Length: 375
Image (cartoon, rainbow, N blue to C red; front, top):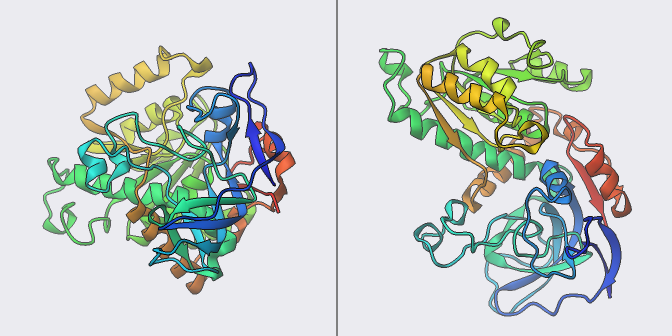
């Protein structure tokens, strides 16, 4: 037996509880057994417990947790790329096996609802002491980044968002006629000014990644980052502008920009920033909008749509990442830790017992990646 953090979908309230469940069966063929060391906690877990999304694989019991760092403790006979003792992080979406993107090994672009996502959609999550998974859905990480490896998931989404941004803008009329300012150059981010909106770990990871590509980055935050992060962000060349929305955010202080990466899900904040974009700019959303009161007819979303139509820009959703993006994120983290570019450990909260999962979800820490352990 082992401990797992589970919810009971048939009940009116989804309250996570620690329970004893059977250990997974030994790994088969290309499967590996992972001892789970850390499980990440983020806003998606809050939405899940509020029943705003999520499809349980079992009406009686559902193991939560969609982010994980662990060590491989056993492997099947046909495993080739992972060995016992390796540290790993998972990919999120698993293919449906039906649509063209999934058959092309791009399940993050799945066009059906038959995909699976551990802890989120039709699959048990990672909040157990041990778990078994196929080696194709795990990425090996250097042991040196194990303590900050939970940052790989938000960073991977930022990596994909940056790729989307460049792809869209290559197909859009440029706002500048200079050849070196075109978006189809190898170092397309240089000489571009990109806004990153939000006040979360994903906000900082997106800002740091875009800065590493050579972009000028302005972080537009409803909540000012703490002093422990403010100085390192300034040293990294990132400008921070903070203020509450909608009436308190000083949008007029934001210089005109080529693009906007949204990690806030706040339509009021994004609507206030649209006029700061050059014509034919683009907005990439890394998180879905959260309407006021949960209603789809939120007037701020309507206002944003109107501003987007009257100010020619592209709105691009980007909510899931693929394995290649996770691998790129892991490599970026390894390089950043080795070069000591930024105090990444300051973005990861202290490990908390799994019994505090619900409390972490109810009271999220801005600018910090929360995590639990079941060991």
